[in-house]
Image (tube, rainbow, N blue to C red; front, side, top):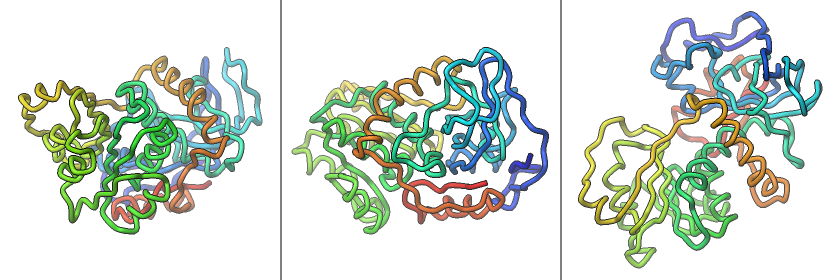
Length: 325
């Protein structure tokens, strides 16, 4: 088969479409013929040499895919060759074939085409696990998501609105904020021109955000705590703004706040399977009912993954960027 390889870490040109050995499914795994994959910022870090895949996993980038089951490993039940699926991956999605643990498979939701389904696994699992399973967002609460026009952001807006929350977003342009408003966002903050802490306070009568989903890390740490409501929960899922920051613990104590930080890739199989099962139970009906939809900015040939990485680096996209085989 062919896959995107990274002979040496570097810029987008480091991604090389090359012939590699076919993967073979083991116990409890299936082989998927990939139709499409999606680009995540973690892939950019891997390409640069900063986010190596866990030992024993695929060396190729790609944390999600959609395709058809080509073979079943020993001990697999409930799935058949030819089934159309999408999947959460530890890696290997930038390839013509990938091996997937059975617990990380999802059926393609009704009403979503197979190519577009690749836009779903990572964002739905990330948002549902952090915003709902960990931070316990409830109806009537105020939810702030940074990067509202990103793949994560567009899904977070929709899921939060679906459960009856009030949604605030940050984004860097009027076009992006307008799109967030179309998805249901109530409070729109242009982070280039406005202070999100002041805007959240003004729009909540000083109360603050009950849950914040943050992709920035160090740069926003103290400001996020300032923006929290009493008993607020800050969920950190990225570090685009750095990895080391100072925290005013007195402010956090005064808010009786909680800070969590999670990743998906390195979690044990059982934890990922539990998240995938929760997504299938709670999110898939919302998609099939037309209440939530994947947002795709563009699709590009997988062999041209370098161009897709440049799109993410330029941050001009809205929603997900997909790669097709």
